[in-house]
Length: 161
Image (cartoon, rainbow, N blue to C red; front, side, top):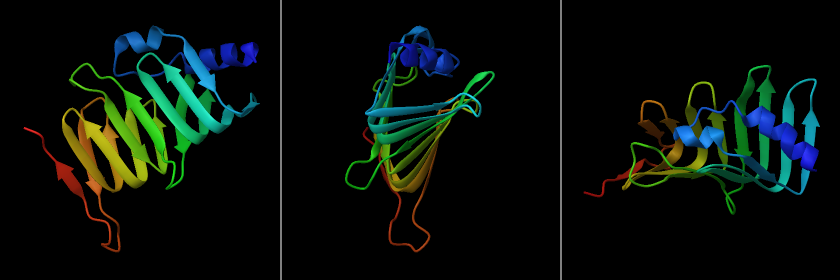
C-alpha cells in the first residue's frame, strides 16, 4: 500500500492549486480499495475515498483520477443524494475555505475548473450559491450557477455583507 501512495503522489504532483504551498505538500489517499491502470492512466478509489494535499480535501464514495504523461488531468468524485461528494480548499484571495458539495464533482486540473452536478452547493468567502449545476473557475474566481431544466430547482445566491 505504501508503494501505491508513493505512485499516486507522483501522479498528483502536477496539480494546479489555489494555494501555491499546497503543491509542495505530501499526498494522502485513503479508500477501501484502489484500482490503478498504468496503461491508460485511469485510477479509481472506491469506498469512502479521501484525497488530501495541503488545504485540498476531496471526499466521495468513488474518486476517479485520470492521468497522462504530464500528471493529473481530471479528478471525478461521485457521491449520492444522501452522502454527496465534497471539495474543500483554501484560496489566497478568500478569507474562508472554498467548500463545495454535489452528487458529482469534476475537477479539471489543467483548466482550473470545478464542475458540480446534482444539488450543487458552493460557499465562497461569506457568499453561498446553490442550484442544479454549478461551474467554478478557480483561476478567475468566477461562479456560474444553473437551475434545473424543468424549472423545479431554481438558483439561490446568498450575499453576506
